[in-house]
Image (cartoon, rainbow, N blue to C red; front, side, top):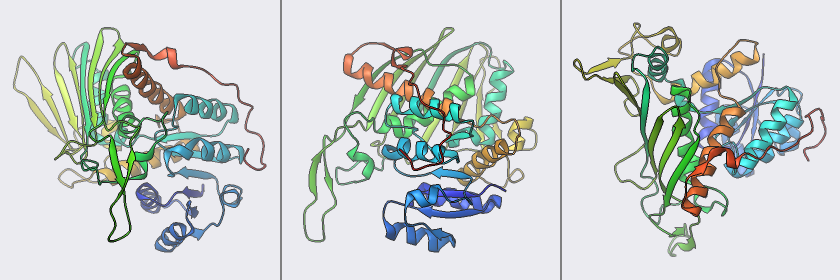
Amino acid sequence: MPTALILGAGFMAGAHLDALRRLGIPVAGVIASAPEHTRAVAQRYGVREYTDTWTALHDPAVTVVHDCAPSDVHMELNLAALKAGKHVFSEKPLGVTAQESRRQLDYALASGLKHGVHFTYRSYPMVRELRARVQRGELGEIRYLRGHYLQDWLLSPADYNWRLEASAEETRALGDIGSHLLDLARFVTGLEATEVFARLGQMHPTRYRPATPGQEGVPFDVRGEDQATLLVEYGQGVAATFEVAQVYAGHRNDLALEVIGTRGSARWQQERPEELWLGRATGPDELLHKSGLLCADARAHMHYPAGHPEGYADALTNAIRVFYAGLAGEATDAPTFVDGHAAALTVAAAARSHTERRWITVTELETPTHTQPAHSQGAPS
């Protein structure tokens, strides 16, 4: 049976560990940037506390690496894991830039190893139902998409997180939660973004690092956006309007996607995950609930019968389960580095559009790298 290694000790590391335990997948151990964080997570879950990343990645017991570390070290860690001969299941965004995600994609494809990106929201039963109805043509020909991903956890200038100190080349809200929205739209419709026009904004250009008790916070200039508005063309006459923000009061984790066709519309909202709204001009609207009457794909992603609520933890468990099914040789639609790179390209196009104040063709950002196959079992380079 595959055995997992967890890189990181934050919220997502704990979520991955909970899901792995639920699935009965053994965990070799955990390694984080700070020894005290590693120790706390290792003790909580009863797994090994690795003291250095090289030892962890080259432990013969480890077959799969779960990269739950901050996004600015994803490329370094994912490439190191691939070079060590390990399959990789990475948190999003895959890299800080599209060039980073491209490099990882090229290397992963050359390695022959399995590679996955954690796009949680694909794994909800009602998202699967929405996708099936789009594929069956129930909405007619798709014409428009509307979507948003809104949060408020960075509303105050005193709200602090390591993500706020992103490098000048790194997007903030777009890369963090915008990548989820973009992937969700791509997954549900099967369409590829072709052009982007975007405006990025900041609620607070100056924020404050936490200080010791009795002292004021330390101000610093914020380089990344905390709000973005996007117009996206998908070709085939399909256009989208998307909004992303982490400073909208009252929005906790408000992700929504609406697909609008010539015969009807359908909308899914993450905060009401067991519902799917269907709108029709020729009859009454309909609100579907999770049940055993859904399509086979949706039923396969249900953990409990109708009337038994399930949500984020169940979707994450689905995502990991499907990735490991792929390791066992099953054909799956688990998102890979291909999907991670597609999201990164659209995010990069939005950032350039804001800077240059023009429509950006997504293919303008595509610059393939040339990477040697990952056959080496030596130290990460």
